[in-house]
Picture 1 (cartoon, rainbow, N blue to C red):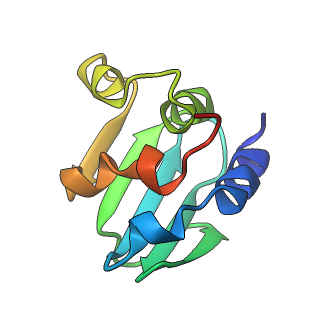
Picture 2: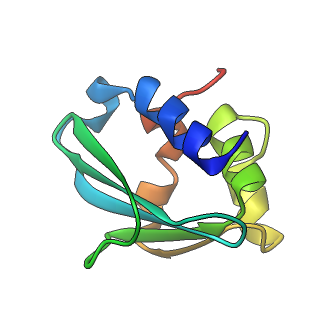
Amino acid sequence: MTVDELFASMNDNFNASAAAGINAVFQFQFSDADNYHIVIKDSDKDIQKGDHDAPTVTVSTDTATLLGVVSGTVNGMQAVMTGKLKAKGNMMLAQKLNTLFPMGQ
């Protein structure tokens, strides 16, 4: 799956009820693809290619690791501990990725 297909799938699998009350920007920096960001504002989302000026949390990884985290086949905490995924900013928000975008669960 390409990063474009991954974010198209995330768009289709967005859990708006889990995003209620959340106002945040997720920045995704990939080692093997173009960067993306997602603006979440109270149950709505806007997914864009590129970088955001003021992200709430920045996730740095490769596409396979992010796909695994959001699909539930890769433990996010394990990915952090092994250095496959790095997060800066609001760590609690980063932990909500697979709840906000439940894919294949």
